[in-house]
Length: 448
Image (cartoon, rainbow, N blue to C red; front, side, top):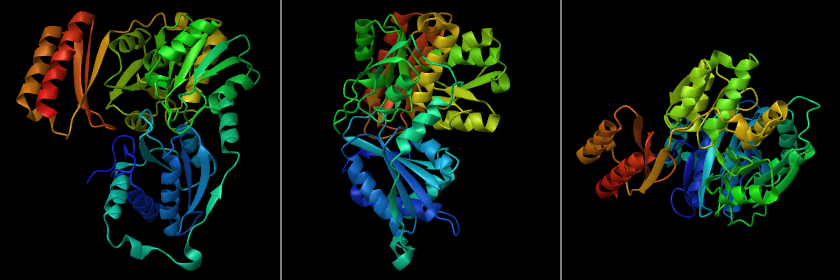
């Protein structure tokens, strides 16, 4: 059994592992691992706007309280808000109930330790081991040893004030018109409030969650809506979150996509110019565009790659002492401010840079020439070692030969979904589209 992927536990609601019975066990096991002999012994639980969040929240709370830990409930709030509040309130752990960019039928559970970072593999393994421990129930306390659940009513307000404090006092965003696509998710209040309170003119779309419309044709994975709205309202910038708002994608005043790689690039150069880019390097993943790497090297900034997943970026930043990193998909970590990808903070930092430079987003990113990339997701029924399948290995090697050093191929299993992700990057779009299609076809034949 391996419940934890690269971003916690995730699956279809009411099917294993996201059944209420199993979620109860997850809560019990997590408390069994996290509970200390002395201290507050309190876990903070936040969630996105999915209908199933109520059910999972209740099951988790019951499991945790049954093991003698207390729970602080904060309701819908972005994932980075949970990381921040866990640290700020000095609690023992934080839990987010969310399946991020997945459809509403899915949900998930991800954990933060008391310092706001994702749980290390060793603790996740101990939680998994306890879930299958038939004796777990025998370890539950009784009487006054049972935990309590509290609700923190001003959690969203606390997080909003913290986000605003990441730019200098006295700075306003007056004169900037922005469209915010909230994805009907966890940031439907936070980001619009932050930007309005700082003086921006804010138009919101997809900001009326009903439990089943989260990510539905909107948000960071569906940018047509934000592009059209920016052009319709003649806005200066568009911001699109995913369901739990740990990431953000942009479009400029022309309706052109601006992704995480480009935001990392402009922020890295600004940080270096200000003398505050730790290690004169940024951390990204193997998905990071070669165009970003070349742009950074031209500006004498190092580029460090990790496996895909913001947790691996955060781990490398922490161990190496770097303060800027992230992913092409919009998970961007400003470790001076937060310990995980933070969509609202990234949105604010980008708009602050526009204001500071008195220029448009299109001009800010104009120096970054990204290579074309083709991404194809292939659904699979079970995971297998890709290197053990000769036909897949052969088609990948053939593609690399045809690129002749002017591009690269990356084929990997998703850490959050039953899919194989095929990425081909190069200077010739027609060629990389053909190569990606060939690889995806072979993967489907051999693994579907």
